[in-house]
Length: 126
Image 1: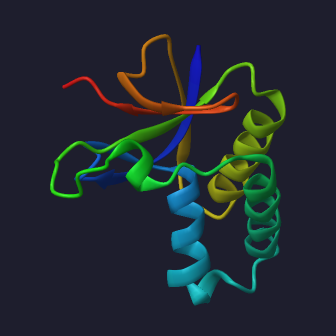
Image 2: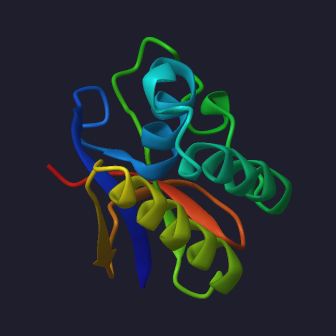
């Protein structure tokens, strides 16, 4: 089982909705009007913790030909309890400031392009 937290913002390249990490980083970098809310520095703290826990996949690891139109979508493995819990908390923080994030579960996220013990990057089924 795989778990993904996603916003309502469409990512045209990935052909799916934007994930929770992109949504949180958009708030951090593009929404200074929200920075006075207590949730924003808390989101940064969660992202920093996840950066230590997770091995972020490098785009070139699963998309060696930059001209290829294959793009990946990140999913947590359901067995990655701590990262999933932190992702769920990050989703809750975003929901709390009015940016809807939903939790999706799938047994087949698509063609797996990269994986480690906590996550996979998959090309979604069309």
